[in-house]
Length: 274
Image 1 (cartoon, rainbow, N blue to C red):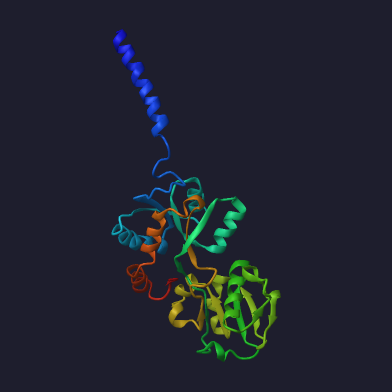
Image 2 (tube, one colour):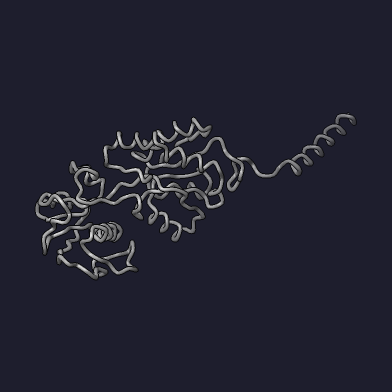
């Protein structure tokens, strides 16, 4: 019995020493510089999840296994990422992420753009944005975020000019030049496609355009491109942004195979940013 007790004590000492010397950081712990072979990526159900399935196949060729975690809301994926329950997420544009970080003090950052669901300006009366007549009635969404987005798009098209400092918080009051004296009508975003017959043009979100049978890259007079601040992004925890694992994720997402898949699947409704 004494020998057995001594042996157990010795085993306990060795275990303690082993934990102290070999503990360190787990390979998959947050902030580790060790390249991971498996990561969990949060997405929202629908196109983002579908695209990530295509990315997953490409990443596997580079030795990276992606476990896709689907969410049904826009808040939880950032909570899960910040807490370390997932390793990255892909579902939001930069202004939304910036607001989340500001409001909730998340320590997360975007590392690459993914796709954009481009807002476009549509019309049933003209074929080119340059044909917009003087005094034209142009509708934009009446919510602050999408309203600003629409005004930036109209500025990009040369229809209006905004105060330089307005940015993504632009309102109609920030218009400083309006050479064609267009009449901006602020309407509920979901109702704008139904009002298109009564307007000269309208800025419409992609999701509502699709329901109305419109294809952004085909039917819009002008649309957002990959340089838009509303391009969607891939986000990780700030401490992980230099981990080479996530460069593999970016490389897979930005691959020619995924771009082709998106173009064939969505036929111009969702546009790659690369």
